[in-house]
Length: 614
Image 1 (spheres, rainbow, N blue to C red):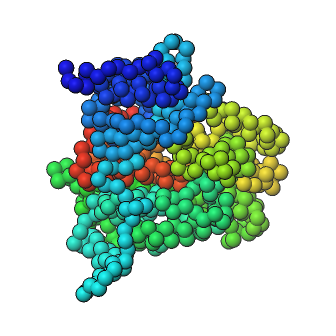
Image 2 (cartoon, rainbow, N blue to C red):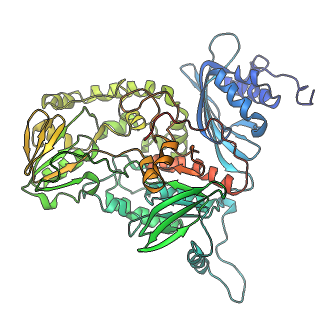
Image 3 (cartoon, rainbow, N blue to C red):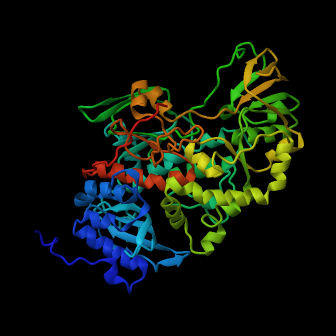
């Protein structure tokens, strides 16, 4: 027996005088130190969930119930060597659930988490119901923040002094010529920029590339009414939050300017006017060969890791319909829609009934176009004010900040709810929203609009996580459909004629312009275009949980497919999502890349399986 094996066992029963969280963590750490996996797993309730964001698994993974905890610890415990579990604030108990914020250490890093502890009444003391562990820092590779921040100025007299700017200019000039990026990030929207900032602070040689002339053009070039539908408190980027006077819902051009400003201030290595045209992975060399065109000139880079940060709203899903070649008017996807100004007095048919469709219909109506929306399947709608209050107000709002819920704390609370049971928390919220705005929903149904609340009534956010489509956050355009100012047609599109759109039931809609607000395909479509279909199939579908609901086929996978974590293609990663996800999950992706750059072993527990192709 080792010395660890001979340590006295401290159970929950022997610490019964302590609060449930203190007792539970004392027992849990003792079991881990003794390498007693059975005892540690026994501290989890019969129905329980441990979500780990790279701290134990070098993966984003959720295990369920004591058996799942056993499998995770048997695979990782000796290597991780967790210790030093400590509460960071007094635990709080409400409705039989004790919520505990904690920190801990591993052999290579420092972590934090959130536990919800219950007493099942079986006489064995407190048990964990939900347990979140996250890694936020690597030992010896801490970010230069706070007391570790750089001096900036070099005091004293030095011949041939090199200034901060000169060092940056030399670094930029050498990148891609004398030095290769360790990480190449394809896509310079908010996701790529956030990850680039993280990698910059961690000292990982990285490069973000984008086809547009300036950072933020992804937003500037969209239709002029576009704005964020999520509130400012939900949308901060890493390190640098929006100022206190920033609009609650930022217009697109303001978002674009902020991204450009952020890229400069955070010194993100960023190449504009750059397109990746082809990529291939060399298994023996362990690196990529990526062909680019920068400012129209060919260039080859040899990064070790390739990150596709092209976004969920990147690869347009454009239907192929009979008659598109004979239609005499204009037609384009919503991502190419220039705005309404040129279409005053024109007849416009917008195919689709989700966010972009409503935004575009509303803006076209405002400029005097004759607009018809074609609804092909039911849509979930929630009014913006109601969503902000009931759906997000406790986590992301001035109200939340006043209650001590910072953005960082809100992110961890959000992350601590396992996807398996998240819908159970969402359903009552959306029931309240429906009750509050029942008059609005009655008007929409009276107009013939098909509404839904998700397959199980869990509303917008679960639809977003499961399929990334099928909803609209109403900022006013839905009232135009309810009133009939925007006409409504329903059914599948059969064909186009020279002057119209014809539905399957024979309805003919005259059109000068057809807008395909038909969404976007799986992000692995970008991998197929850039690398190969074989690699895209090796990776499989990107996004979704395997919930078995509409457009999210099972089996259950427990996490977002292939997002922010290793894939079946070595050294290929996917990063994106909304601003909240880009902010929060960029940390874990950046730490995974930093660990590999630093030579830290990163054995992945439960590598993503492939059940569906893109």
